[in-house]
Structure formats: C-alpha cells, structure tokens
Image 1 (cartoon, rainbow, N blue to C red):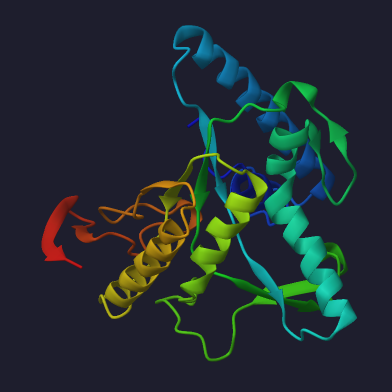
Image 2: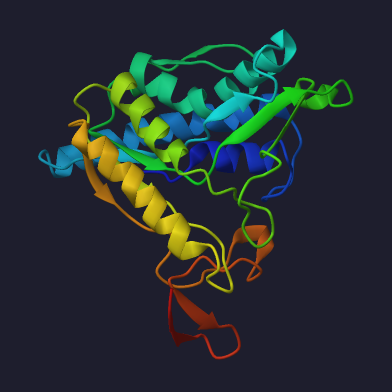
Length: 254
C-alpha cells in the first residue's frame, strides 16, 4: 500500500483544518491531492521495478452518501457534489489519468493504471442536504439518520448495508480488480455496539462474496486502541483495550 486514505488527509488537513497543517483552502487541498497521486504513481513504478510480481495499491476512505430528502433536487445536487469531492478525485486519476475535483480537472497521465488492488476503508454512510448557511462547503451539510445506532461520540452510525454498497461500487468501478477491506470498525469504550457492528458488517461482506465479487481480505480497525490524530485517546477502536498510562493491553476482548 502506497498511501492510506489520501482523501482524508487532503480534506481534513486542507479544507476542514482539523489535521496538520490546519488549512482551510479547497484549491490547495486539490493541489495536495494531485501531488499524492503523483507520489503514488512514482511509488507504484518503483516497487514494480524492484519486485515485478508485487501487488501495489492504495486505500480509499469511501463514504457512501444519500440525499436527506430523496425527491429534493437541491439535496440530490449537494449529495453529488460532496460525494465526488470526497470520494472520486483519487480513484478517477488512477482509472483515467484525469483527477476530477470540484475546482476543476487536472491531467495526471502517469497515474493511469497504477493499481493492482483497491483497499477500501468503510465506516458509515452520510446523509447530505442543502444548507444555505454553508457557502464554503458548497452549501451542503452532512450527518446521520435521526434513528441511527450511534457510536460513543456520535462519530460513526452503524449502517451495515453501506459496506455492501461500497463493495458493489468497487466491483462495478473496477471489474476483476481484487478488493481488500483495509479498515472497518467502530469506536466503543463499553463494547455496547462493537459486537453488533462487527457481526452485521461481516455478514454484509459475506453477502458480497456470495455474489462472486472480488473481495480478497478483511482487516478490522483496530486490534488495539490507537491514538486518533486530533482526537487523541478519546475514541476506543480496539478489540483489545489499552491502558493509556501504562501502554499495556487490557484483558478485555470485545
């Protein structure tokens, strides 16, 4: 894997301002994305020069999205703009050599075809709607369904069908390309939600396998509690807990 979640780094660091360097500049974020695409393409070729039989790819944080009001033209438009901006810039460049973004397209011909598998990171589904008070976000806002089964800090909604739809998207976008679920999990300090989230999502992966879709692996996020960027130790994703003070695993599993 050359890069994990390039879209998250670009958008969180250069649009939302949550990750370093804390910028809020959409055009700059797309320049960063283009540079990561070039870096991926260069790494892909360098690895294959050293090890021709290697399988090289990247991991995309994929966010399925639905309009809050299905019949609303504005909600549907906002969903499409946000969906393409978050999900499609990197994949479009790898597929076609053209990075498509909300601020314009950019030719990166050296990136075309630099992918032997797709790493897919899935956590939840976003609901998107028109919001006139958010001009810097293309007049859109996202959230989760009101009745959703939520994680500790309302960061993830348990929507198992979304991982099936994500695999379906990958299968249709990249026919015959191996798909690896490189991240899937939920923050849960009390293990109230995790067992249900895990079994329901694995069931959806099993559904995809039974369609003969090219799912070749599944990696849970994560084995042990981890430090989550700007959120620190506040979110517990581990199957095993971690004592923050001693940095030792607890005896709890699930």
